[in-house]
Length: 98
Image (cartoon, rainbow, N blue to C red; front, side):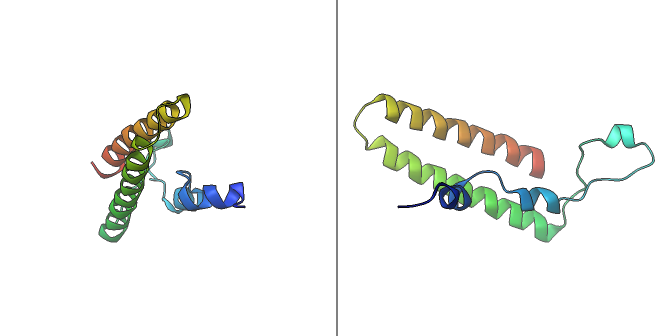
């Protein structure tokens, strides 16, 4: 049987190491910079794009599998979760790369 932590580690959207690796911008006016992130290097930008690409591909695979399920409340919940994740990926990608 697969452990819950293994499932989260393999496909969970939250990666604390990735969040810790983002440098915070520093200026003399700290109040204006709260929560902002310094621009990423070209290498880091490419890595981030690949991460978004792979996450999107995983969600599209999940969508194709879920569409083949018989109609049920579970299928409806899974499809709603996938739609939400794809929407959030769009927002996160636009915010970090745009």
